[in-house]
Amino acid sequence: MKRLLDILVSFTGLVILSPLILILLLLIYLNDFHSPFYRPIRVGKNRKNFRMLKFRTMVANADKIGGSSTSARDPRITYVGHFIRNYKLDEIAQLWNVLLGDMSLVGPRPQVKNHIDTCYTEKEMELLMVRPGVTDLSSIVFSDEGEILKDSVDVDLDYNQLIRPWKSRLGLIYIENQSFFLDIQLILLTIIAIFNKEKALVSVNHLLRKYNVEEQIITVCLREKSLYPFPPPGT
Image (cartoon, rainbow, N blue to C red; front, side, top):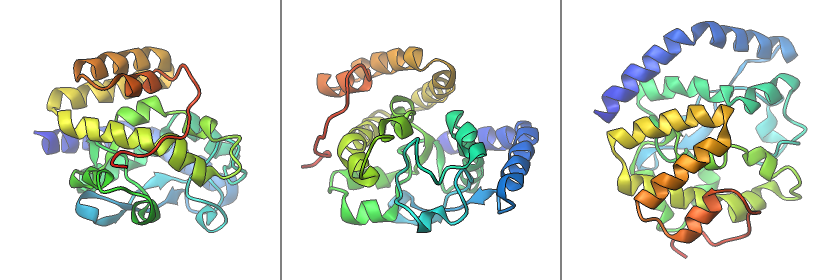
């Protein structure tokens, strides 16, 4: 059922959004006359590498002149890229990966191979047992990841200390409780979060309490307090 939902929604989405996709491709290309696509290597189910398709929001070859994590003030982000990132439009291209079977609509976000090889704990490796997703709980809670990291001196370090520990925990919570109904809820909450994040976070809070998640995770996910360094799951 999950794969059927992935195919139907990704295909329908690509067709319906095709006018918007064409406009985005044109805007990105006209900004600097380079390819409008960005295809980084990510790690998928069972540690299989794949090329994740995204609309390019940074200067060409940005991965060669900076780290893998990005702050809102990263000088590599283009003028058009800021607009695309603000509304999460760069993620639309991943519907193609969903259609191909590299990704699912809902699942733990795909990670950079270097992070997995050098940072992941044995517990976090369980995240690689399922297809990575276009969205999940962490996509809603940390939709402002760039803003969180905007004042970082070392963006990759702060990502791994402040954000990754919680994203991994939320990914594991999803795997433990995944269902067709939960997938539908998270897709709808992702859309709501674009326009009203506070309302989406309240719904996430209700979901986490329903699954008897520990209070510390629930408190962090409310995003009412500053994030603090915390060890990843399994340490």
